[in-house]
Image (cartoon, rainbow, N blue to C red; front, side):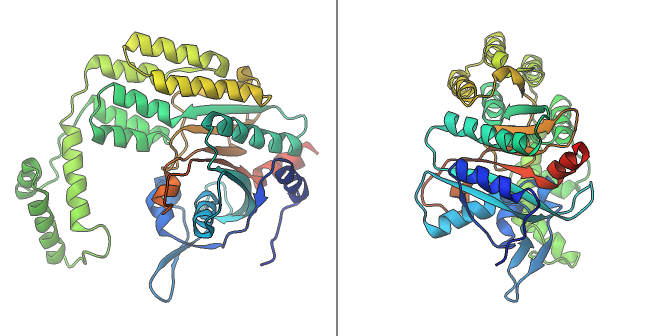
Length: 373
């Protein structure tokens, strides 16, 4: 296949070589299920779907992380391994244009998570600094693992932990979930029969009733979510509505999400929060502090990096570090990435493989470079 590159390609390829990342090419047509299952609601609704002659659901490549990981698994490559990519991705965008270039590095199998995280931020920063000389770059960092550790330490039921963790990358969804948690609402949308089955917790009887209702309405059980999926979701929502979080726990969660400090003050702020809320977060905070030290060793000054406890990214596969890099007051990120330690196992790897990576929006970079010229 002949690769079509943007104007900045040569400097990007040189940086890949300098950073020891192997350039890979992955097909534009991808199996859709991994993206639909793991990429998050924001990306799912913007994917271009199609179907093969055999009925397999396919899509145009909407991002590179999942295809690179699938390629790594299929080739049985050794780890640690650093992959680089540059090419087009296809998804609907609010800013216009459904086809645009991204580049980035995926770092797979590095056992030292702190060093790999720091290197990923430094690689992205170096790429942007080279493309936009003289531009002030700001880094915003969050941590999915810290957020999930706080939820667990507060004693939230597993269902609520999952809902809040899924919402972490979307401020609107997170606020809606917190509002529901503060003011649980009972649903009056069910018939009395369904409401009784939900209240009983009998998932098999509820599934049968939903299947009967779908048949009566002329809906095929295979046309969308199955009766079992719908029943499971209704029971989960019922469990969530039954939770009454104490005011102290709710206040602690709000206090955590309000932490927004320079990175060199973040460890102390998190430690003070944990002591004030009487939460045991030692293991997560030790990992966080090791990453802060590793970022400083990469030449990025922690004071020039912002830690925002409420910051996440709208992809479901992140498990730890998440970050974005902006230029000046520009609200659109130029680069974004994070850690995804469970992704390769979910994609079929025979053993756990840790991963971290980032993508750069090259059209945004070149727009800024052109404007500065």
